[in-house]
Length: 317
Image (cartoon, rainbow, N blue to C red; front, top):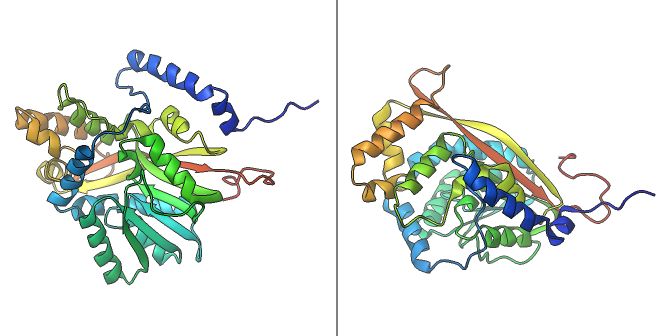
């Protein structure tokens, strides 16, 4: 007699998720640099989100957005978005992914929690002649009906949610049955993982709750995507090129760069810069002239099977 197949959802309902969390918590102390998944703590006050919103609105996001554009193109390719499909770009920034999806023929909605970024996205869409429905919205409380989209994707956006479980629950809610959820996340062992840990370490006793570098670890992504029957994680590399160390430091240390907050609170900004440059040196490309960084990231994919589906939808992508 063939044993019944247990879905990922059933396994987690039976307590597998709790056991995995406990295992990860134990490894947190055993593996240098390891970060356990965020727990389901009560949400922080609105002040924390307002601080993040101001960081994105204080500076010019376009230089950083331009560096991330190739990853958005890769994410769209992996999603296999086709003309006529309904897609949501959540944590959309100024629209790298949304514009690319609209050009591919998708019916695109884009959401970001920053009103300034949404206005920049609308203007970018207008200039690009891309038909995109822009909305100011938090990923933890999306203003869309259940099962609205064929694909929900996020290019380094969802990973900054304060409450990862609430964010993924919302994303899962608005995607239709057998629809695809896809996000990019920084590899914790790569350059950006090191930068984000460096930024967190400069907060002293006031450790930030939002730890985006955790999402790129397989175990953490597996746990966050526990509600999906199909799960896949792909490794990728994004190359960032700079004229020199000064340009590189300016991008990361000025708002909305990931080290902007650490620069404000650092007692010695020069020492912080030296640490950053050392991190960058370890990720420099050996084949590209100038200052070129090979920045590792992951694409995390999840899809629920339809009841009658005989095989993995991801395999048929």
